[in-house]
Length: 128
Image (cartoon, rainbow, N blue to C red; front, side):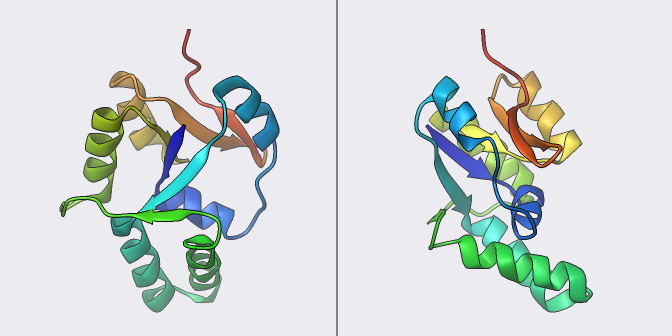
């Protein structure tokens, strides 16, 4: 299953390793993490324009793009969240986020959400 990662999720991954991946994959099957070009652009902007801690987290997140996560191209959009919503709905894929507002919008649109709780991956809205 393809999992689109948003900026908030990538920033956290820049500072902590993934835990509980095997448990999630046993429920959903093999996960293929992808990062939209819009998210990579936001991470580059954070790397350049943020304080030392956020800049370091963005740099670490960017190092995962290409090495562990594939970069995908989404159509241009004013907001990354909108592009992620559109792509995930049209392509029947999950979204990895810790952004509460985005998570709520995804759940309303019946998109599977993977999030973090106590530094472990969890399914934010298990499907029946």
